[in-house]
Structures are given as structure tokens and as C-alpha cells.
Length: 205
Image (cartoon, rainbow, N blue to C red):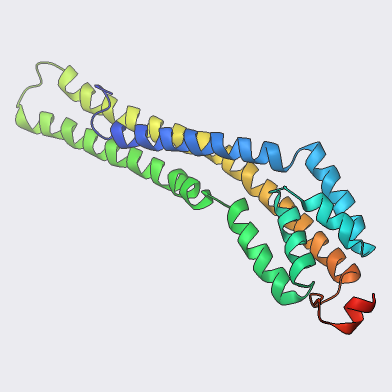
């Protein structure tokens, strides 16, 4: 931190933020995309396709898995396009949570590093311009060293954030695909409108 200058402080904050978000997302996806979660979605899809509402409600009971939440909303409010779009949009925000922050860190970190590079080079030129003869080359090398440290740190923060970000994006895309399968199965097996207690057809059924 002493050699890199003040520019390293925002890079340090961004790295801590990136580490915290990455840890939270890893825990989230470990719960939502494990083998057991995928098996539940397969059973749910089959139950929806066959119109087994009681089994759907049982599978969704107490689960906060995005596919289950969508299926529960379709079972309660009707398997129509309006309900499906609203439910999927709510879960999409959960799946893509903090993605904008991670993307901003990936973009901003190298730019902050380049800012430190420019500042370091300016310091070196100021040293050269202030002396007719350079007695101590360390005055110039310090600015160059600061420039290189900040650039390398900014790139490192961006790279360390990039790979988890792309992994999370891929997991979110696959989860959205599973939600689309759940919606299609629900629209095949469940009624488009919710059943009402005072509906004679529902009572006779």
C-alpha cells in the first residue's frame, strides 16, 4: 500500500466487496443448483405436466428454490402468461443479484489501476523536470514502480472477479431455462385460471 499510493485503497475496497459478493453467491448457488435441487425440479416438472396440484404444493412447501416459487405461484394464481411472467421476473432478480456490482468491479478496477499509472508517471516526470541533473534515480523509479503496482493490482482484481461472475451468469441462464420448462409444464397440466371455492365446477370436482 505504501509503494502503490492512495489509488490502492479503492482497489482494496473493491477487492473486499468482490470477495464478499462472490462468497454469498457461491453459497446461494450451492443450495439452488445442487443435485438434490435438480432432482426436485425434475419431479416438479413431471407433476405439473400431469396436473397433480397436490403433489406440486407438497414439493413446493417450504422451499425457496426459484423454480419452486414460480411453480407455487402458477398453482395458486393460474398457469397463464401474465402470472408466469410476473413470477419469473421476481425470481430473475434473485438469480442475477449483485451481477451489476460485479460487472462494475470488473470494469472499474483496471481503470482505477490506469489512473494510478498516470499519477505515477506524472510524479516521475515532475522529478525529472525539477532537477537539471538526476542525482538519485530512485526518485524516478518510485513513480514508475507506483504506476506498475497499481496497474497490476487493478488487473488482478478484475480477473479474480471475472471468472466467478461468468460462472454465476451461466448458472443464472441455466436456472432461467429450468424455470421456462416449469412454466411450460404448468401451462400444459394446470388450469389457466385459479379455481374458486364458489365455482360450481370446482365444488363438483
